[in-house]
Image: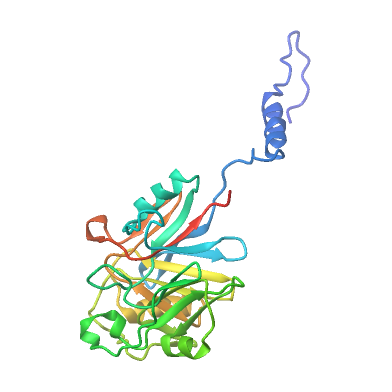
Length: 272
C-alpha cells in the first residue's frame, strides 16, 4: 500500500472490482447460478514418450451407460455425434463418450452386450483364430456395471462362472491385465502399432478410460494401465477407429478419417 501523501484533489479508491467480486460470490451461492466448471476428471498423460488421453469416472457421482440403437427408431447410433444430438433433443447434455468394444461385419457387438439390464447379445465363448482379430486373442473379457452400481472387469470365463445379473456390460478383447499381470500373449517389441483404447476398474466405483494419441503396441498399452494408472484388471476396447469425447475438450484418439460406425457407445450424460 502506498504511503499517504496529502494532495488537493486526491482520487478516491476504486471499489468496482470489490463490488464485482461480492456480486459474483452472491451469484455463485444461488442455486443454478454456479459458473461452469470442469465436468469430468480428464486430461492428457505422458507415458514412455507417448501421449494418452485419460478419463477418470467416479460411479458414485457419474452415471455410466451404454447405447447401441435409438430406442424409438431402433436404428444404430453409429457415432458419438449422433448420440450427442439424440441426447440434446431430449434435454440430456453429453459429457463423455467412447466406443464400447469389438463388433462383427454386421456392425453388431461381437460378444456380450447388456443395455440397462437387457441382454441384447449373449456371451461369446468361441475360440477363434487370433489372426482373425483381437477379440480372439485370448483371454478376452467383460466390463460390467452391476445393479448396485459397482463395476468389475473379468475374463469371459470368470464372468460366466459368476453368473451374476448386470445392468450394463460389454465383452471385448483381449484382456490387457489380469490380476495385475500383463496378458502373456503380448510381445514387448511387437511392431503391431495402432491407436488403442481400453478401460480398467481401479476400485469398485473408480473407472478409468484411456485412448492413445498415436499408434502403440499391446505391451506398451497394457503397461500404461499397470505401471502408470495402477490398475490390476484392464480390458482392450478397440484399435484404429477408437476415439474418446469429452465435453469442452472435443475428441482424442484416432484421426477422424479412420473412424467407422460404432456398435455400442459408453456415455455419461449430465444429470438434470
